[in-house]
Image (cartoon, rainbow over all chains, first blue to last red; front, side, top):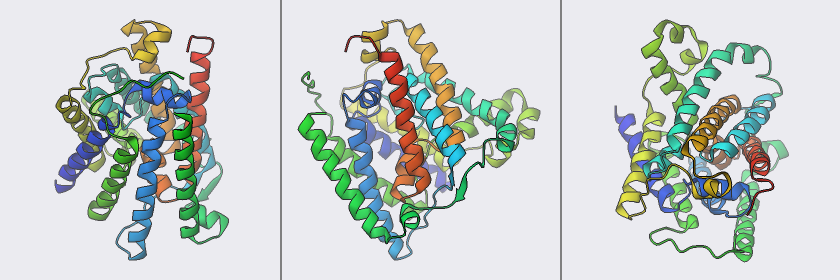
Length: 175
Length: 175
């Protein structure tokens, strides 16, 4: 019960921030895919670098439990591409479209309905997929530092520096 | 390059994104929960399915893996709607709109046309997200924060798919 309340509160905070930064809108999402407005990329990478430094710092003291997904190329690549194609049509993400509806963009309702159908469809085809494409290219649980064999802080420092350079470039180009 | 319209009450995506990163850190620290959204559509689809065909839902392996019930993440997704609604109403940026501006400029103001495409996009996007085992929240934010290779691959292909689709549907149109 407590977890449900925490979920709701965390979602409310996140939804508030998403709306404040205007990232839930179709125009912002598609604007990024058309290289016209990088608002969502700025938001996303800002969250990622702050979260990355904080989570890995807390992990040093064993205060957090990392929980990421295994690399399965068949799933990550085909699923990623399919998601992207659908995203390009819809212009909303599973997490943020509730926020779009929250600020009155009611076409998000169609996206939500479509996603419920998509989830049901996936559940129906799961046994078939499991036998065929799922599990192709399964490399298990792998992080970028493990893959290239360096200390994670080196990766984090390079990543953060790269993101800051990207932000500078966005601002220079007025994106 | 057209001038960006001033939007009073909006926050810098860098600030709002960075604050979201802090929310993620606190969430992981307190409840062990990383952000994600697409699993909630599976649980919701299962709950809706149970209302119509309880026997069918009981048989499907995917709904055994993801039980059709409320959990932290589903409440989180609902919370995003509530939080965005509060922010939008509070700052006066709530706007009842069924056809996004960018869409209307290219495809016209028919909410039916927009609705059909959004619905189809939602189906494809959610099928892809489940195949990839995550969406821009689970793979994008949470995966990248943890330096997971799966998150990086999925994120790259989310954008590749999205860029391809927007290239297709917005090609040849006025800017």
